[in-house]
Amino acid sequence: MTPGEPSRWLRGGERVLASTRVLELRSVRYRHPEGGPERDFVVAHAPDWVNVVAVTPGGLLVLVRQFRFGSGGLSLEIPGGVIEAGEDPVAAGLRELAEETGYRGGSARLLGSVHPNPAIMDNRCHFVLVEGAAPAGPVKWDDDEEIEVLTAPVADVLAWARSGAITHSLTVAALMFFEGARRV
Image 1 (tube, rainbow, N blue to C red):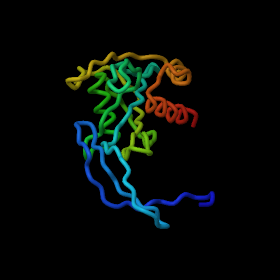
Image 2 (cartoon, one colour):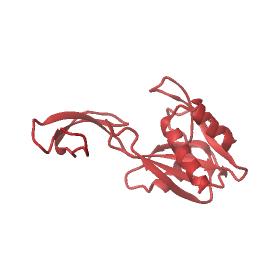
Image 3 (cartoon, rainbow, N blue to C red):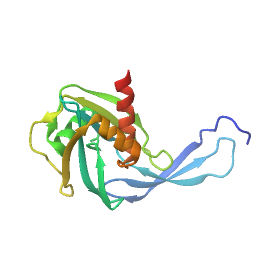
């Protein structure tokens, strides 16, 4: 092959290898369009996610700190979670913000979307900006959630993302979209 634009491989059949509460592992068959054997690739199928950049009237960002089973440690991040089937990302963001933090907001809009890991995953993560966020009710955590809710100045949170104090990649990406939107 010569350098240039890569080919889009042709998707064939698939089968479920494992199914969990959070995701399915699928074996997906692909073939290069110029021939060659078909090959199986493992793809993690998950619902789309939403992460929420919530700004208070005083200019603080709403954050959560919680234990993460994958990293085995505490993670400082923005609120977020799974988008239910058929749910609009902005509506999901407002729901997740209320459930995890008890905050509700005024205006809300989509900042952008990314593929969390396109090498092995098929879902997207949507970033929602909620302005005018204020405490408005009780939290509604899942059985396995225990969350510390805190607020911090925007400049501090952006500095933590740049310095590596915030390590959740989707939080860092959402803050990048937020910072870009603030400059416009």
